[in-house]
Every structure is written in structure tokens, then in C-alpha cells.
Length: 246
Image (cartoon, rainbow, N blue to C red; front, side, top):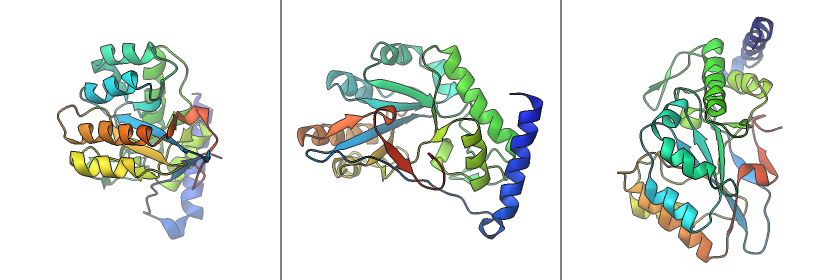
């Protein structure tokens, strides 16, 4: 990014912050839906790979059952999980790898903590998080990312504007499947199995010792048994709120 463009984006963020004075300090958790299909219905499965390792229970189930998924990966996760990335790259018909940031830092341009994680804290830091995530994916090979999901999936309005200016659509969701991978298997199964036509599910694929991972698998298999079709974000028309996709 040129210095001129960076200055422009930072200025844009500041002007939006002024215009949105009534929303000062407000964080947004955008929603996202794919266009309903009718019939058996369709849903989009999105999985965050924040850091740590790979939940092979989920990865194996996706491959064995031919369930497509959009995987949001951080630069941290990419460095530590080469074997999983190789499996995903070997199945381009199933896996779409997208940008979850370089260091898993919330895309919020004011200093604060979200779920105990310190935010980027400035426009420059938000830009660095998005750009470093994209660079990590480029280094790992494969198509350039088109989507971004920040850590915690919460954003400041001005950060959304900056990220959109960089050319990324922002991936909200309509069903929180695993509560940040902290839910038990039974509740995770229930939430995911309850998905309706057009829903976008968020869950995690980086916590192999959490009970939620088993629930993700069981919930997905329940949806498949009902006749639900799975799509990746790039494979269906979609709409998000708060200016995140249009």
C-alpha cells in the first residue's frame, strides 16, 4: 500500500468517526446470509482458524463427507499447520481459504478489549492486521483472499469502511455454532443442526481438545442427513448488513 493511500484511508476513518459520533464506542457484529435455495435448503459453513492447532475431527469429516467450507485463517495458524493447509489445498472443490488477520487482533480502531483480547487500537493497526493476513495467505500459495473476518467478529464502523476500501467483503454470520469453541458438544450440535435455508454458520477448527469440535461434526452430519446443501461464501449470492458486503 502506498503512503498516500494509507493516509487517505486513515483520514476516511477519522471522518466517519466524526459523522458517527452518535455511535461512538459502539461495536458491530455484522450478520450475513446466503440467498435461500428452497427445497432442502442451503447453508454456508465458515470455520475460524485463529491460532493453535487443527481439529482433525472436523477436517476429516469435511473431506470424508464432501462438505464445502470457507476457512478463515490467521498468519499465526498458517505457520503452525502446514499439513492441514496441504490437505485443504488438495481439495479446492471443498475449501476456500480467507483472511482472518495476521495476528488475530480485533479490527477495532480505538483502544479497548473485546472478549479479553486487546483491539488493534488505531486505523494504522487495523490496516496492518488486514494486510498482514492477506500477505500470509499469498505466501502460502493459492488464490488471493476476497473476504475478511476479524478476531472476535466485532468491528468499529470506521474499521469496516477501511477494510471495504481495501477490497475485502466482511464475513458476518447468522448462527454462532460453537460459542467461540467454548460450548459443549450437545449444545454445539443443537445450534448447528437448527440451521435454516440461507444461514451462515460460524464455528472453529483450531481447538482439537475442546468438546465443541465433536458437536460441530455431529451438527453438520445432521444437516446433511436432512438434505441441506453446503456452499462456500464465493459460491452463492449473499448479503450482509452495516455496509460489509455491498
